[in-house]
Image 1 (cartoon, rainbow, N blue to C red):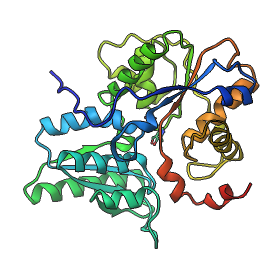
Image 2 (image 1 turned 180 degrees about the horizontal axis):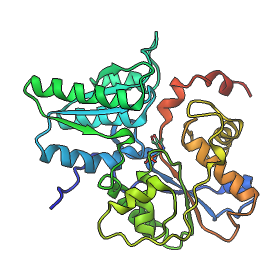
Image 3 (image 1 turned 90 degrees about the vertical axis):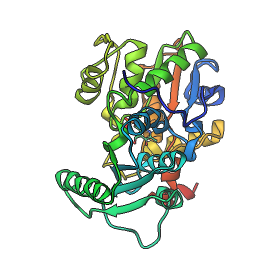
Length: 306
Ligand SMILES: Cc1ncc(COP(=O)(O)O)c(C=O)c1O
């Protein structure tokens, strides 16, 4: 019997109408909604809180004393793991790629505030990062503790259940919804949504996560993964993402992060422009948080001009 999730966030997150953003895109005022998972409560909020409720339940059931995870320096998942550990009275070790910056910014500041121990791996390969995580886990054991390793992005089939909860909230808030637009990283957010909303698709990671979720009957029907907004890479601000950040801020007073949610809204804008997202549909944009990453982003100066 899997453990019950621990309560780390504030639920349900709000579903807000976005009439001015809809109007700017040429949609009817009542056709666009924003699901505010950026307002999920813990540690600056964001989608990762939903996963951590499940992951931390497993960790506590196994008697964990220390959460260990990995990520990029501006990982929102790492920041929220540090916050969850603090909330639960656990230690946290974050194994990060790259080297420590001269001055910490964005998520790194919050990691440190929450008491996380940071371990830097330089330009290590994923395999080397994995070995470092193993080394840190052994160190915890040697000191008499019990480590619990959370995979990159916090995505496991069990953690994806956090987004089954999100989908159930959405169906209660907007029973007639047609489409949810969300950023995809390590995949569990989309997998959890798809598991409950009843659609599935061919993308390997999301599909593997779905396979690991017991009782999920998924159809390969309507799920679309649009790689059109990836641009030149993870930490590069694309022109479309920059425009999307301005649009959300100037129409609805909603701030997006440059890496995930700005790309997702840019994808929504492109979908409206090319007719994939239609006027008569009820579309939900899932705001998955990540705002602290803006303040650690290398292209921040590009956002401060008009
Ligand atoms: C702000 C934000 N949105 C979306 C995602 C993507 O979620 P997932 O990793 O479950 O695909 C992430 C993952 O890092 C994130 O930090």
